Amino acid sequence: MPAGDDASAVSAVSRRHLLSHGLWRGFGAAISLAAPALVESGRALLRPQGALPEAAFLSTCARCGRCAAACPTGALRLAPPGYGLAAGTPYLVVREQPCELCGCCAEACETGALERLQADARRIGKAVVDTVRCLAWQGHLCGSCHSACPIRDRALWMKQFSKPFVVATECTGCGKCENVCLADPPAIHVHPWNGA
Image (cartoon, rainbow, N blue to C red; front, side):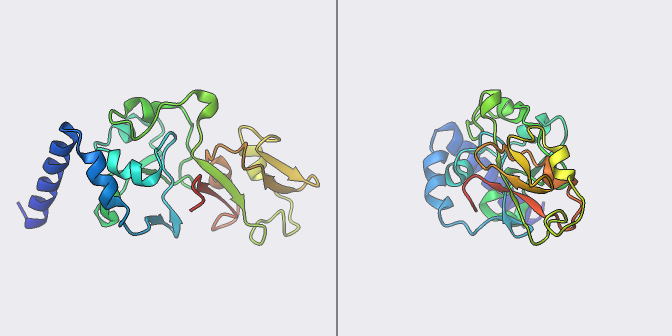
């Protein structure tokens, strides 16, 4: 086995040992604060619904992959080794596959890193429109994001009947708007609730 694999195995065993003794949460919280910003395509990682605040999430997640395996649409990815302390933790790329907010990931989580929420409380972030890139805001006929939004006219409205804008307090961050945006890169992005 290569030396790198040995280190990974030791790290996994150490983490399991700490988890089994209830120590990983405190240990992880102490070291996770020093972690570099974790980004995908220049943005903070978008965590699944019910995720604890980032530092607590990193220290509580067991990196077991059960949440990703339980995701019926395959939307959840596991961060690769280059992501430091976030390696092995779940995140979403809604441009490729939006979240159905079904709750399966939280149901599969055994450590509490993903809290189980009632259906009406499930959120992963908030969509933000880039009015400079948005085709509709530039005078073109487009309403793809509005049509895709499962709670349109509540979370995503068409201002003056043609320009999309988001009501942040209503948006669940499911990513269906970003997924269908005709602009490339998309002119509407889902950002984590922490504003990163």
